[in-house]
Image (cartoon, rainbow, N blue to C red; front, top):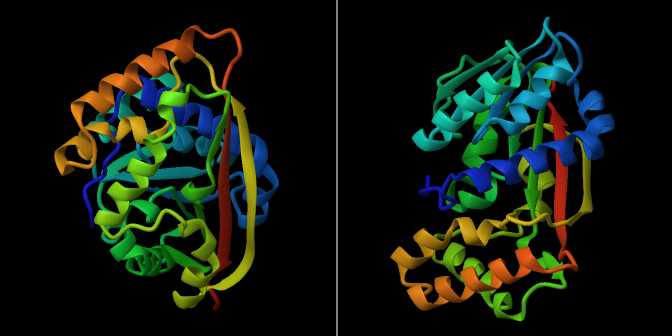
Length: 265
């Protein structure tokens, strides 16, 4: 699996929490249909700082259980703090990768994997195959991913116009295709699952001051790869600061795809 490019930070944790709140609002009916109900055991693979894990913990209630799996040590440390601050007591966090969680086969009612596949292009199918193995018979694998080529920002500073292009170039060098969301149903079917749903929506969000998109969190990795220069980072930093002070808030239009499939018995 490739190295995760998005550096964890307070701003990045807040972005994850905003995404988790949006997911709960937009996907509530899908979660219930997929089996995320009181008493369920849900594995959150690639949980990052556990923002979604906390929301899932409340959805399954005290009789349910959430297992968050994360391979990045900094993200796992942040996850422990986020869970502690949340007050939920039914989240277990453990190290592991999306192709080797270390969990028993058939141990979950629902296995969720959000925005992980696009960062691990060469391992996409191996990841979904492993998720399918973790699901019990009749259980569900629930995938969420993006089409980053279709992301837009209204009223953005013009100096940010090339940020996404560099981000896509960076991922292409690592064998990642950030249109993974378009292929979720194919990945589920290839893993032997019965595809029950595949849909796409635009998440529309007025960006609060201080919010930064994923390409900004990947700037250190892009610098190491030579995709961008220090001058680019300085230029973007100034642009974000201008946007933070602007009266008109920029609006983010982020395409998101959800697909889930049942493990046949």
